Amino acid sequence: MKIPKDLKKIYRKFDNCKRCKRENNPCLHILGGGKFKNPKFLFLFINPTYLNISSHKDYKGNRRYPFIGVRYFYRLLSKAGFVSKDIVEDIYKNGWQVEHECKIEDSLVANGVYLTNLIKCTQLHPENPAKDIIQEDLPLLKEEINIVSPKYIVTFGKLPFRFMTNQEVRLKDCLDGKYRTFESVDILGRKYKVLPCYFPVGRGNPKAALEILRYIKTKY
Image: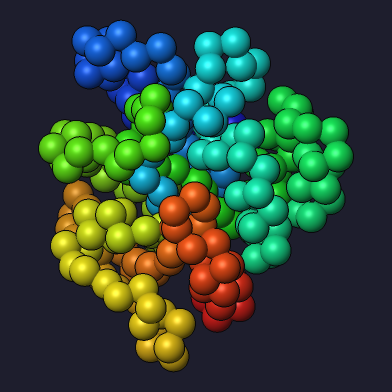
């Protein structure tokens, strides 16, 4: 799918990260991907790590997606109805191939989803990025969000939710019949509806994340 010119400019700014150059970060940035204009959902994660194979310099794809190489993440999305089950079955059968990226993109576009991270810099460790780093990159993220212009922002984990709303949330309440939308902070003169979700892998809660994603897919 063709990337809009204004979004390409934002991606180039992310790639021109002075922090990564200063720290000699050997990993490439992970940019956004999916339905680039007016998706129903913008899925906002925290940051990529070296486990994402598209952050490696020898990767031949477009390095647009969080969790490339983390197949159980896409299995979760397929169970929630956002990615074709056939693609995920092929990934499990044959391992990750560059062509899977294009198929995943087609599936995300069909389901009105754009994927991105708070931070585009790939870390060599699994820890959350420092708050000052997030604050430093937040203006560019806001530009990205306004260009993509989603109907809803789905935040995965408490950190993205906090930076998108300036609020705290008890994710447990999301499973107790109290699920609702929240209003975002001002994002370059606009506000968006925010839907909180558990982080779907690792130290998050994949089971609860799946429950919320299925609810979101059905109700919104």
